[in-house]
Image 1 (cartoon, rainbow, N blue to C red):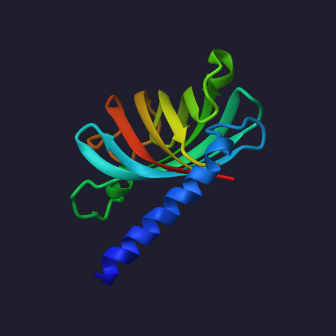
Image 2 (image 1 turned 90 degrees about the vertical axis):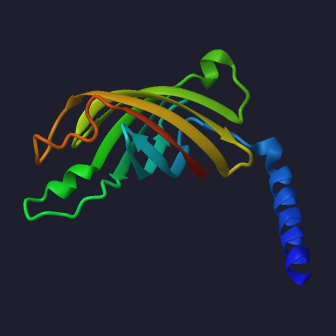
Image 3 (image 1 turned 120 degrees about the vertical axis):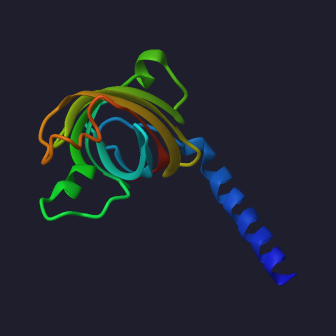
Length: 170
């Protein structure tokens, strides 16, 4: 019985905290906006995780970096081919919030990413339910490969990528 009461109390506190932040929630603040994101990534038929950082430098553009690791289900070998399941990329995004006068809690963006494995295009959306916390969904497609350690293992090139996760801003 104590556990049920504790869970209800924590839920009520969380709702109050998020509700008090509702008026100040902004998905993209423009210049000096900083976002950290962590989420689930699905590329081709493989699943993985991603960690990203993004910083706005005006009301329309932001730059950032992202690390993606796929779970390939194979044992690493001596040739370093297991590194083909990892990617580090830089990205430049254009935010459509100002152009379309979207609500401040909602951000839609498109962009380009260049990384160790591929070069491609992406789009996504964020919804912030408080000043610092939100959710995101994104789609990417990378038609060009850059560097791979193995010609037979191209986990990223030419495969659609979908990702969802949490975003934290400060």
